[in-house]
Amino acid sequence: MFSKIITMEQHILEQERVYPEATGTFTNLLYDIALAAKIISREIRRAGLGNILGEAGTVNVQGEEQMRLDVFANETFIRMNSYTGRVGVMATEELESIVSIVPDNPAMAGGKYVLIFDPVDGSSNIAANVSVGTIFSIYRRKSPLGAPGTVEDCLQPGRDMAAAGYVLYGSSTMLVYTAGNGVHGFTLEPSLGEFLLSHPAICMPALPRYSSANVSYERLWSPGAQRFHRYLQGMESEKPVVGLSARYVGSLVADFHRNLLNGGIFYYPSSYANPVNPRAKLRLLYEAAPLGYIAHHAGGYASDGTRSILDIVPTELHQRTALFIGDRGLVQKAEGYIHDLG
Image (cartoon, rainbow, N blue to C red; front, top):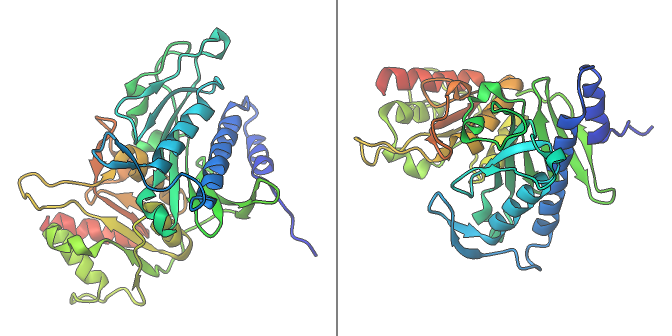
């Protein structure tokens, strides 16, 4: 007997029926994102044969050397969402300023959604054939419809998201998203060119299995973060987490995806190399908030070590944050250590 095949389109339309007032705009925006992901996936699949590997010779707003794939994926996302009338403003990790949509056709003006994305997370790994990903979030705009979108439209707390998701380009291409009513995963079937529902109603397992951290920086972490790390290793007097194995890829999407399906925690504390001016690495808008929204709706939790990632109100587009994300109990344990020890 064949199992029922459900495409991403069928799944979204089925969910849309719950909201009689829905116009289809949000649904079509998700289709646009899925199409951009297919294009990026195609280029990654032939990365060793095409001209997509290596450095682009440019530096992004973060001061990081851009990969050719970063540039291609960024341009693809902007192009796919600039002329639909669904998006009023975009923000991307690769550009310093917002991309405000002012279409030539007045009928296409006033897109009511805000799209924020990291086009390729972990792109430096692509030359080594390591999994990379795309992270995105969708908000409802605050500025008046019919006018260009604003920076303020993008600076909203994660709790106000309409949806968030990521695409993992690994042994298969998977798109995982939530609109607040469950987390669902779709695997791209290359022969059909369709994302098919493969992981419905994802929930983080009750028993965590993995911890993910770049432990080479442990000496630079705060005392609380160091103590939490030792706890996970069973080096504290408290009962350790049984069976927790260390796994770290270096592509945030890949590490988060593994822990989402199998249970665990990813953590990237701030660096205290300069104790007067601790530095965080991960981007609040492009990485931490959308993945935190997904974790929340899968039964997990995301924190900067002191508060929920979803409660942080951004003050700038490229704001950085510490991140502890995954199993709720473990993240709260990290918060406890940091509260007590700093």
